[in-house]
Length: 102
Image 1: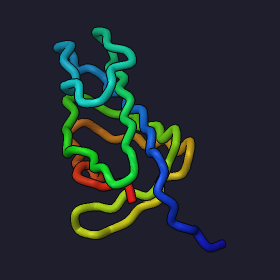
Image 2: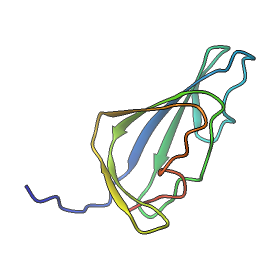
Image 3: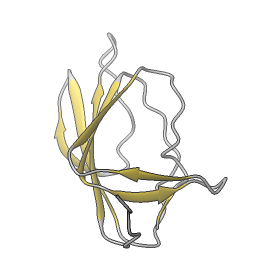
């Protein structure tokens, strides 16, 4: 199966679980839900736009509502399929930060 590169809007939900102190990642995307237990943010990345590097203070669950291809600053391209779910432990670095929707 050959994948064809098409630029489309990339939509991701990021759920950051709050630490014991009740702090969560600073809001960068559109805040969908924010309480003492979880912060849910929606990121919409149009073609040619980049995702800023960000670090959460808690564990994160990423849900790729509308996937696409992101290319890192180093030139590595990754296809994120619609509906993909990714878990990231607190303090883990991300390939997503600094990536461009290509």
